[in-house]
Length: 133
Length: 311
Image (cartoon, rainbow over all chains, first blue to last red; front, side, top):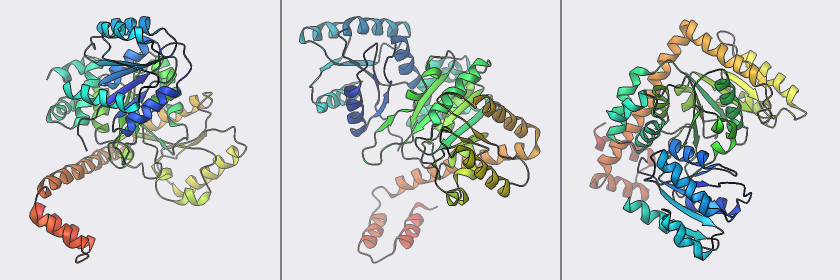
């Protein structure tokens, strides 16, 4: 009953108003046995980092459809450094062109899952990553 | 211990980490509670219970911002159910706490109940102590929302608000045990419904019949989304706290609740020890096999199994 449970934050940063994908991923992770906090729409980076801090999540997933993934991730990483929670794993999903995957990874993102990625792949990524941590 | 010390200095990150450790159930978390517990007992712990969709999170959002506006330091613990099917949980309460989330000084923590009965999780009491040690003066605990059996919260909190909506059912629901007798304050939410006035009169009349002395449970109407009725609700919450602190009955009740909370945790400890004793025990497996062959009934099997543990 008290075993370590994987706690995931699924966050929607910025102006984008579409969260069907984020909700589908949240539901799938819940079904995979994880504790999922869904942030809701229109969160600022400061808010996302504050949620991650208060909830002490193991991993943060950002769902971004606006094309602003690079500046958003840069901001997130900067804020995480400021709050000294840089150890938390970050992954990104949404509308992400193939050419940006390596850029995101260069910024410190551990996994990138563009639209259409099978849910099982995201689940497997989190489980494997949490085992290593 | 470092973490406990940092919590007492007001460090949110340490509080968040410590709550996770208490959830995991290890010795380190429990040692920290022992250090923090002497610093607790003064905050007003407010439980908010009611059926799913009654508006608990929305109401807590408004209450928290209002309390914070009056200079109070507020903490929120929102408990959601863990799935018995897949052990996962979707913690969605803070979604409805947008204003509270934006308000400086309000700490919100979501918790999955991890199979614990009674509307909270086993670690919720520990989380309340952590938030109080962090300096919170008002701590609101939102139950899972199963409703009628969310009783554990009663033993953890000083004041319970039961939220009902005009479509709660009929008067037979009011006559049942559970939800209504738990509440120190009843708030009827979503009062744009045409039946709202009649319903609050019905409920108030029912409560008057059942409670003849001591605290008289007020029945208030609110519109949590718009925030109307919140000031009256806060007056009632404060009045109940004053009542508890001034009154011998209130002080005795606080002590009694603490004892019963300990009993609830004791049950869990006994269960954990019993599970360990049964693991791999041939006699236990024999009892289960006999039960499955219907050679022994479930009640007798349970009593026999208990004997193995030596309890």
